[in-house]
Image (cartoon, rainbow, N blue to C red; front, side, top):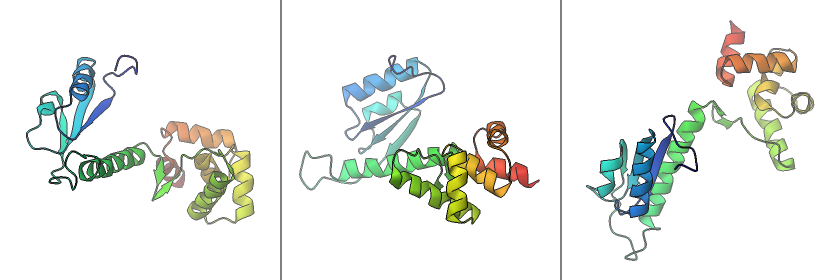
Length: 177
């Protein structure tokens, strides 16, 4: 926790099917000492780890098909909850617009094509226009979207996004007024 710089602005979630793994308890204990909020995802009722948690998700999935193999039902249920948490965080941080991921990086051709399609869906613009504006915007989906809907220079789109904490929906709402 120290090495990661965990502090008061963080939430540390322990994933512990048994509810009593010493390593997870130690990590949550230290995170609390550092001021972080803590939580756990467990697969038993009344887990030991609850003493170190502000938040608890308990998934009672019953016995595993193969005894001792918590990767099956327990692990799958935990993964589903982690997917829900990360999705909610992405939405809250403004990385999603409607049901579209908008904070992609143009690491390869497939992702660049996905970025073009996302901006086309949001703006209704043709492929050539979207591609051109994305290139001009250095492949920044949010800035390109603003530049297409409300024609403006890149620096102005960045300014508005900064004023809206990077939230595309907030920026578009502000410009619509």
